[in-house]
Image 1 (cartoon, rainbow, N blue to C red):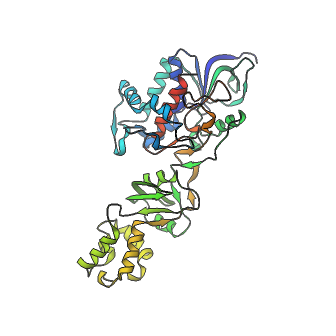
Image 2 (cartoon, one colour):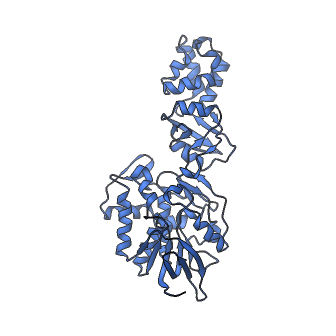
Image 3 (cartoon, rainbow, N blue to C red):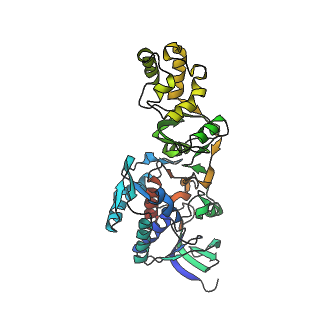
Length: 399
């Protein structure tokens, strides 16, 4: 290879984890080159949190992450925690605020977080090249790697794969990191879309369409996992934080349960109403607790034969059945919206191949994986960004 440019570290991918790893390594005096296939770095950062970037969470625990090895993320999360990132944000003078559940967002724009990362990269003398297609990666006899790209040939001692997952392909997501993992003999766990809206093909699709835009505070559960959040009806199915969180735990073919009255005992409520509001209609009573449009949509499903029957005349057994539906409405999604709108990719590179301290591949010295490309997926609420910072920092200390 002629005219080969040599650097200490090459980072493939200019997203959150890649940029963080790059400047962390640069601060140690390493020469670092970031290569990104997109026309600009940090696209997912810019679109995250509705353009405000939910950059971390005040309450970060390993329980907020899905991984086939639940202990894997502990070390990195402990060595670079949310308080350290908040300190970095404050040093850059970025104004932020807390929303529910400890979520932290920029006051102004996600551009502030990207500008901060790029500023840190500049100070650490990191070189960033965009619109770069990597054609081959091969190991060198003397150690390290040779990369052949459409921008030229490079060699490095350490190679960091920070390519992200398959989610939101319009943002430049590709499966290249997975190809590299397979090239070096690493196992890939079956990937699927996570933090993604549910879709329906049965009668629920029509109901969701008619209620599109309506949000309801619910408790939603599947496989023994539950989330108390808003459910949002869409013209394709259901979304909102509750649905997005649950999608990471749902498997195709399973039903999910929705408690529409999470703060109330539905059975007690309806039987009391029968005593105290004997002449009232059930839909009018429920409209005190749920949006009227939702109640009218549920009426043909839950109590069709008693739509215009006064409470006193509805059998207790029927009211008990309605109560069961209200507290555990069974919905069977036909699927999800997939990677097109998913916020994350579940699974990925098997963490059994990686050091939890350094993110280095156990069988290929000098090869590191950080961020979403590996089998670590956070809950909604800033957890995936914190994993990007923590895993990027961990690798950046050792590349």
